[in-house]
Every structure is written in C-alpha cells, then in structure tokens.
Length: 168
Image (cartoon, rainbow, N blue to C red; front, side, top):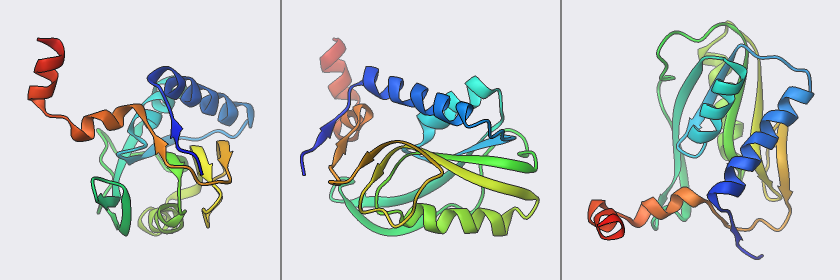
C-alpha cells in the first residue's frame, strides 16, 4: 500500500472530472450537501458550476493522532446553509469514501431528518477498496487503500507564525 500524494492542481482537476461524471450521468439535483471538512472544496465547486444551493453537514471521525486514526463518527445536528435547501433531489459530496462508515450513517440520517427529500445520491473523488459503502459516483477506485495526502493537509500542522516565516 503506497501513499498517494495529490497536488493542488491535481486535486482541482479531479474535482472538475467528478463534476463532469455527474453531469454526464444526466441525473439532476436540486441542492448540494457537502460533508465538512473534506468535502468543502468539492461542494463549493459543485454548487458554483451547477448553480445550486450548498448545505454543509459537519462530520468528524479522524480526530486522533493528528487526524490519522479513525474513531467514532460524529454527525452534526443540522445542515448549515444560507437558506433552506429545496426539497427534491440532493447530491451529497465528499472527498473520499474510506471505510464507508460516514456514508452508511449519513444518508439514512439525512433521509430521516429531511423526509421532503425524494432522493439522495453521493459523489466522491476516491473510493477505497476497504469501503463497505459504494458511492453513486466516484472518480478513482483505490483497491489497495492508500493513505491520501491532500494538498490542504499542510495547514493541519501550521500556525500563523509558520505563514509569517513563509511569506515574511
């Protein structure tokens, strides 16, 4: 299992390719719900390109050992959005499906909390082989379950003084 390192350019390109994959499926949705934090950038791009309202649902499972060890999933109580999300069909986006535990818990929770929603589909950049859940759309299947080093992770170990040293 080799680690996967992703640059900002590659990360942005992958999000755009995922957008095209969903668009080419001809499935249309009324709102985007992203899982924070990993899905924030994905959700932002989907919301802008499809011109759909964006909701953010905060989830957390990688909290220990500087975010490298998965623990019990915590799901936020409500979706944060500037306005109520329309009923109909929602696209749930995230950066990856790792164990699949988040997807397994979040989709039924959203359906229970929002019975006005007719259908929820999911889209991620990466699907790991160990996942017990299959997203409706994914870009890359990773059967060897590599650890993915995403470009924004550098900020996990950085403070304002580090940026000051970088930018003088």
